[in-house]
Length: 248
Image (cartoon, rainbow, N blue to C red; front, side):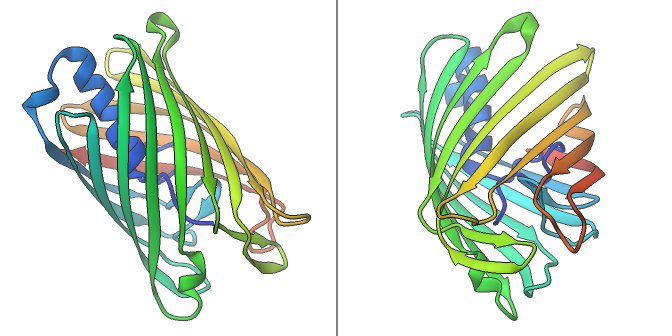
């Protein structure tokens, strides 16, 4: 369990390692690597959902992400987010580091590590975990931008409809697609699976499909989300999520 994206289709950068890698790849390709060494994003969403898991319990949420990168293709990130979960978690903090390699003008490979910590009452500490991710980004021009990531976490917590199963660890595979449609309007698709280690450990699939509109430093989005992981008695999570993000 935990969070990697503010909302699976809103595209607000939840995992700083991944968000910085996407940003850095664009700057490298445009020749602007040395133009800016720090930045961030502030986002508000109608519900915070990460990899098919609701982090705000049908309520709005907010995130603030900051990053610093140097000219040697390294970046450090700090992310903060609000939460509202039954186990008492109220806030999330993410520390991340990323190294990326520019293969050519259209392809980037990334290696990142992140640690997720949680504050609040009850059993909030059960959510904490770390992961290492290997990713690739490919700008296919008319076919859009593709991203693929494989992450390994030795201590990701496992949950089922019966409740908490312990920090068993997991392998996570994700695929994303982004393509501009008309002017500032773009389409986003994504999907993946969380394969928890151990038998009967709550492995599941998730996906998103939506549209986004960018105006200057502002991005508005709406997405339909799906998750096969049962939550609060529901057979699966299927809902619309909207968000707005400002990058600086």
